[in-house]
Image (cartoon, rainbow, N blue to C red):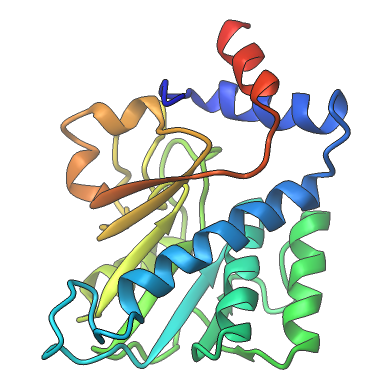
Length: 231
């Protein structure tokens, strides 16, 4: 099923899965990140050595995962763990040096630190032309305007010459309901969105920000999705 979801329906899917089907939130987060990581590997680290399948293009050097303080940042941290386990060079760049504030995301931050995954300051990490950036800063809950200092981080990413930019669930700074981009909004080459596309993705204002869209499963029971669509 790929009926686009609103912000409220996304929240409803998670709530029903957790409260009524007893799927822990951290399991949904794990499924999201674990299923997204192979997509990034295939796109940018395949044996052909390039994102587009051109064997003459250089293989990216590393993945820099920019992580916000909420569950979108937690999804990024799960991705970082699984890429690291597959020997992909990874750097995490959390907006809070001591990690996200939500419980499940904080657990994944602790795992990343225990695994000795390199950590950098998102405001100053040196972005290189053969880096792939994973944008896990702001998720579907975002609306309005991106505040400082996060706006400056987004603008740095957009200005950098990169091998690719992958948005997790939604490009940071894009309202998933209206498709309206904030003054600072990620321009992604690939958007890995969870469960289904979002209603705002169909708007003309959103399309230049999304790149290629890939829908990724998080293991929520199909009944939870159906109920969220009907409520």
